[in-house]
Length: 291
Image (cartoon, rainbow, N blue to C red):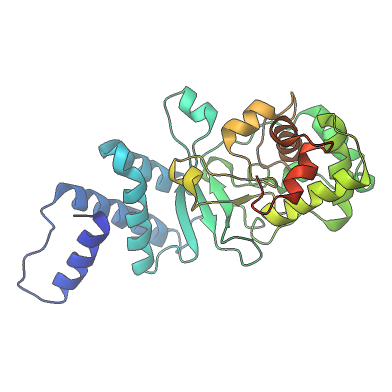
């Protein structure tokens, strides 16, 4: 029996006193207990915690009970929480990154509904991942944009207070300012070794607009990559392993940093799609389904 059916059966049986329930099932009990613990943690903090670290620890304990079935178990926990009116509009998701797996650990994030996002994607507002130090070279690059008034690093969930289980209240609806976009594209093309031409500028803008609507913290929590625990994320929707493979030194610390994500995505597009006399990004922009 699926976990969702167990919850449905339990709900029905509670409405009919005296009938037997599935509460004796240890697996179902573990999931219900996990949801209940999170419910208590949230209620103690006024409904919306500003520190999700305890929530992530509770979820990780559940994962150890049945690693292979964890994706479905996590969905059941989210469903149970929503039935109880806990964390409305939010969802706990798997978010493994290479640094986690290297240490035999797992990562998690909390994502929020965001009507401005394309393709039913959500925005990350909290994550188990740390707040890496912004490299000086990257900070200098931002210092030359919009007369030094824009720093994309601070727009990332990791740089905006959402690291280590914190909560980034500015992430939802947050987009790279229109005035900074051309400068970001030109710098990313230059660093990626791709000619800065009107065609390539337009191609990158097309890809980013289609993939993320210029929201640096957007993440896909429904496709095959998400089900495997490493969702596509950031401006160009790269999975963490692709980001690590194609990011450049000093631009490899933060997948949600706008400039870092652009560079990795452009370099990936060049490696995989360049041909027919066009750049990789130009070919990707022409594709119906993206890349």
